[in-house]
Length: 71
Ligand code: FES
Image (cartoon, rainbow, N blue to C red):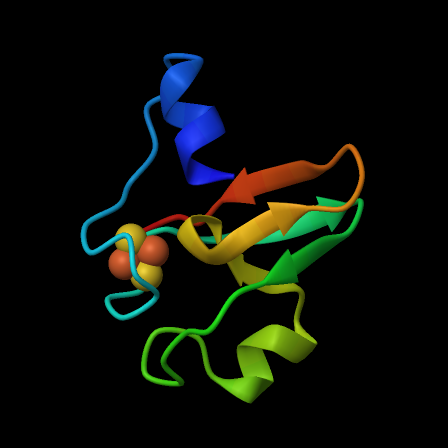
């Protein structure tokens, strides 16, 4: 998902692109994604329960709507 965002010129926070830093963490508000392997330090189980995802690890399974986190 991160690559698609960047290719469309959307300014989105990221760093490692490998699921380690958490910089690309965002809220999935609609749709479904599959998350590739990532570190719990970047996205912990409680955050997953809240619907947070890592854009760099997310593969779209449907159209989605996301929201950047206030940082
Ligand atoms: S860019 Fe580091 S976890 Fe996504």
